Length: 199
Image (tube, rainbow, N blue to C red; front, side, top):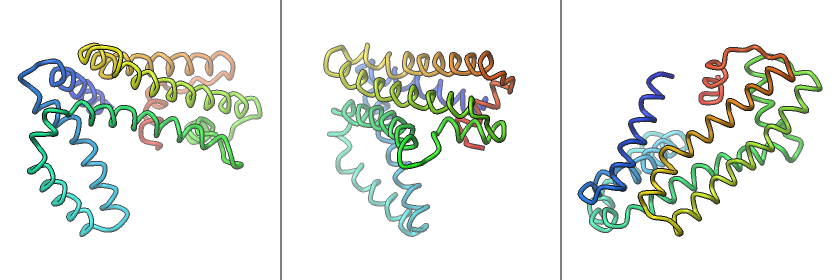
C-alpha cells in the first residue's frame, strides 16, 4: 500500500508538471497515453494470450512512432479520455451491481472483509453503493465540464489532486458512518487494501 501511495503521488505530481509547464509536453503526453496503452496490452494478454498482447504492444509502439508529434501537441485530449473514462468505468461498476439481482458492490467488498452481513448492513451497503455510483458519475461530469470551462492548469490541479482528496474524504465519511451505525471496527488500512485489490 505504501508503494501504491508513493506511485499515485508521484504520478499526480509529474502529470501536473507535464500539463502545466510548456517545455514538458512530452512528459505530459507519455503520462496521458502510457496508462491507456499498458491497460490495453494487459487486457489483450489476459484475454487472448501472450501473442496477442505482444502484437498489441508492437502495434502501439509503431503508432506512437508515427503519431508522436500530433499526440505530443494535443495530449490533453488523451488525458481527458483517461480521466473521464476511468471514473466513468468505476461509476458503471457501482451502478451495474445495483440491478439485475446482483449484490451491490459495497456489500460484496464488506462481506469479503468482515464475513456474512446482517440485514441492517446489507441495507446500508446498498445505499453506500448508490452514493459511490452517484459520486463517481458526478466526478466524471465535473472533470468534463472543467476541461472546457477552465484553464489547463486549474483542470490539471483538480484531476491530479482535488479529485483524490474528494475520494479520500468520502471514503473516510463512509468508514466513519459504518463504525457508528454498524459497529464495525475493522482496520481502515485493511478496508483500503480491500477496496484497491479486492482481497
